[in-house]
Length: 143
Image 1 (tube, rainbow, N blue to C red):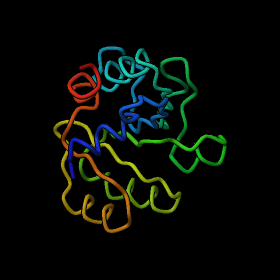
Image 2 (image 1 turned 45 degrees about the vertical axis):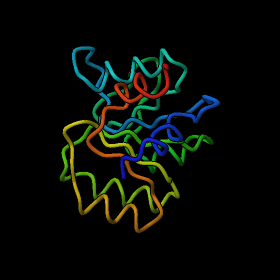
Image 3 (image 1 turned 90 degrees about the vertical axis):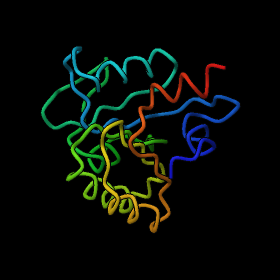
């Protein structure tokens, strides 16, 4: 967990391949960290797919109620599931990822759930936890 090479691969690798991020907990409120971080990633070429049942859209993209809803309605498989939710919700997100065959989980700064991380890794999901995807993008990809 949290290996630099795994983060680089999740961010598109050394070749900076285009990536799609399903952002669980993305807010449509520009003052919220989930919005600012996702706007930054979008500005750097990442496609953002909001996953939040409480909003209709964010950053010009339609919002989906769940990862399952997103996968059933779009032919696009997100490369990374980026999570802005409380630690108690991470395990259910991992279960959904396992059921859908999603393989990369990035849990934002300040969010930690060791049990969910262990379950994810045991199921073949790569995990980055308690790291900000924007900060790591700046650190690892803009050199």
